[in-house]
Image (cartoon, rainbow, N blue to C red; front, side, top):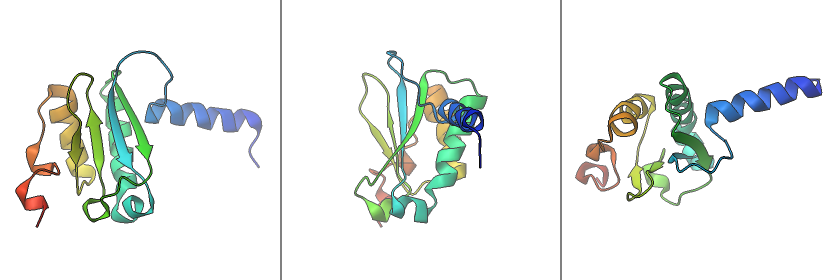
Length: 125
């Protein structure tokens, strides 16, 4: 059995890692679909990669969080990125390597990786 202090320390660590901060700043939001279909398709390593890299690279303007079903199970794992003032980008069929690339290109440089988005022609096949 964990003590109350241990549980609070775990909660604080996870809030920092996943970015569940409650501040008023406009932030880039990375939302990973973590419903049963997403988890079965491999969403947990994707979420962990985003959380770890955002923290390691000091991207304080990025909030990484999770949601339930996004409704496109055949495209799981799904990641939605919303940058304030821009249109939402939906990445599909993600894995940890693709997540690393998205952090480098999209989150750090502002370059959308079109071949991983829901609009990519080869994704629909």
